[in-house]
Amino acid sequence: MRKVIITGITGQDGSYLAEFLLKKGYEVYGIIRRSSSFHTGRIDHLYKDPHEQPRLKLVYGDLSDGSNLASLVAEIQPDEVYNLGAQSHVRVSFDMPIYTVNVDALGTLRLLDAVTKLHKPVRFYQASSSEMYGKVIETPQTETTPFYPRSPYACGKVYSFYQTVNYREAYGLFACNGILFNHESPRRGETFVTRKITRAATRIKLGLQDKLFLGNLDAKRDWGYAGDYIEAMWMMLQQDQPDDYVIATGQTYSVREFLDEVFGHLDLDWQSFVEIDHRYYRPTEVDLLLGDASKAQKILGWEPKVGFRDLAKLMTESDLELAKREKILQDHEMQTR
Ligand code: NAP
Ligand code: GDD
Image 1 (tube, protein in one colour):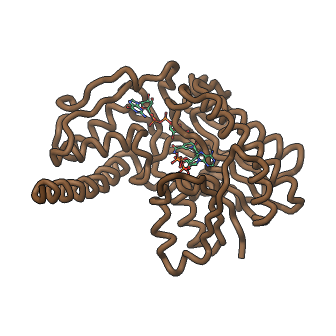
Image 2 (tube, helix red, strand yellow):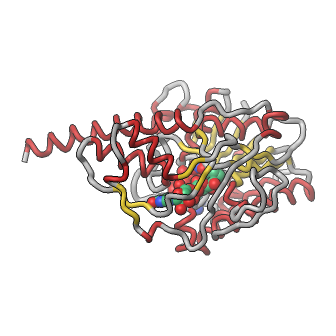
Image 3 (cartoon, protein in one colour):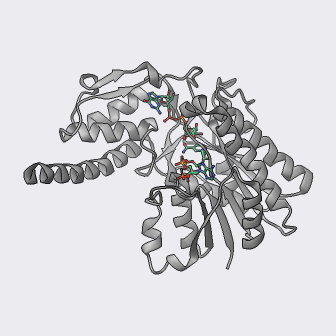
């Protein structure tokens, strides 16, 4: 049975990737951080599934601890490693630049080093990001577009990108960078803008909240569906040769347009509920991202299945169900007071 290690298994992408790899018959080792409260909500359904559970193993580790990563890699002897773990919030990286770079940049190096010391053929995936294009030099962005990072997060990801390329070239490691543009889902963290909007809009619809505070509404992103994007990660590691690929939809929309879509779906006018809070602005912004994934389409045969409107709709409908459950609980509490 092929073994994989996933860092960041408790996150959005890690949870979809674990689901996908278990279905393919892999034994999946997820590295999780110790936390004072439960944070495995996105993978609990896999643990409860009697078919998947025996092949899903969670081990404690942290990208800031190289010796722990080296022991885990040596013990597990993986065939594939997916490095998805990161402090992934761009705005937060301005508040915690040193921690972010320790985990997102040096963490990758620690893992690459541990994997290379195994002396067996291992395939390595690095979660690189469209944020690396930052203040974009050309549009659309491709694998050859120069990087111009605009945050501590993006600088850390550029470092990891080049270490991954260097381990491929210097040590012959089968290592790939997936340069993924923004991808979202009902499992998206609630402080990223799409999920923040779908959570708030559906709560407003049910009378659980009356305002939504946001930052820059003019930023444009190439938004895809996480479920589609994790398939591309796996495809990269199944090729004959390692390489780097842009994964994107080829369409870009503003935060404002996402608001139109979500509030429109709920028959609400967002202008009546949204207020601007400058705390959500970034010291340096990435104004426009638009990816060209034609290399991935040609070589991997990958293309996105879910477009912008369907993505907004599926996230809104999922959060509406969540808000309904919250409303029932709230009504019940009021009645029993
Ligand atoms: P996410 O939901 O924020 O998940 C991040 C994961 O990393 C969580 O499992 C988190 O664990 C883990 N993590 C954080 N700090 C860690 C540490 N010190 N050691 C080990 N694990 C740690 O992120 P995502 O959206 O799934 O993204 C996955 C990866 O792709 C990230 O590297 C992100 O930077 C990159 N990426 C994301 C996008 C996107 O649009 N989603 C686009 C391009 C690249 P806890 O649960 O304990 O916090
Ligand atoms: N989070 C957030 N909260 N963003 C806001 C808000 C708000 O209240 N108001 C406006 N925005 C704008 C941000 O300024 C940014 O331009 C855009 O919405 C998207 O922000 P996020 O959803 O936080 O995502 P991101 O693009 O900064 O980063 C995500 O995508 C990257 C790939 O390009 C993250 O998932 C990164 O980890 C990932 O690498």
